[in-house]
Image: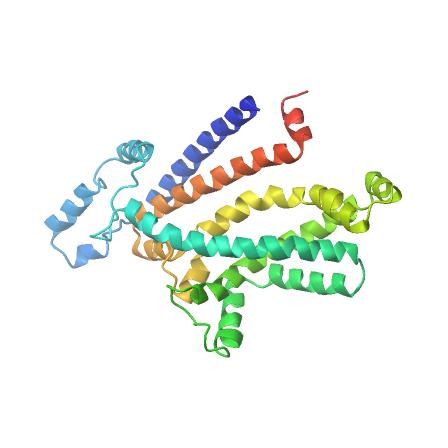
Length: 310
């Protein structure tokens, strides 16, 4: 098990380095710099001082090595547009907001997604199956920004106690959480349905039933545990996507999370903030995938044995 985790950690470090390098190259391949527009309004000496302050006057190779060195120390640098906060401080301010919203959306998806999929499988080609699949098709097909707009128009405007936007109270999080949850909920429902259909047709399920074990017990103790594996495999990307915020949803509902900061940083060409949030997102994603890999082996030890070549 320890060899398996060390191997995954080594792969995670290499993956993170590749992401940092590609992001740095793409960022600096765009013509101009973050102060190009300001150059028309400020004296040339001030413009050159700004480039010197953020190291933009140095060759790309030096900038790259400096950036790697800072990241190794956990320092994402100073924001090029904010005079009051560093990138670390902005991430520390925005991440709890996005994480709270994402955790709530994940809770909704984990409760209703597998349940819908299991019900659909147990009532295959019956009314509950059709209803579950219609909900999952809507969730997969409708983009989150359309879902968010729909919820604002037909729920927030009809029910006065649910605000259209803003942040601060639980009711502010209700609609954006639902909008964020619909896509993963639908994916989990579809995965769970197909996995359950396969599992309940297995011989060991028929054997359990033949021993007189109640149908509910067979489903909960045997079928669900094995059918849940495909959902565990997508949890890493799902959690990381939800925790770091949604650019569109946070913009629509006016939520001050990482998604909102990232959108603003692209518009402002704030190099350090764009790269800081991208690297932070990559770290969250890699950690979640590592966590899921380990959890997967704990649920099904055959996977670990296969990886170790036994």
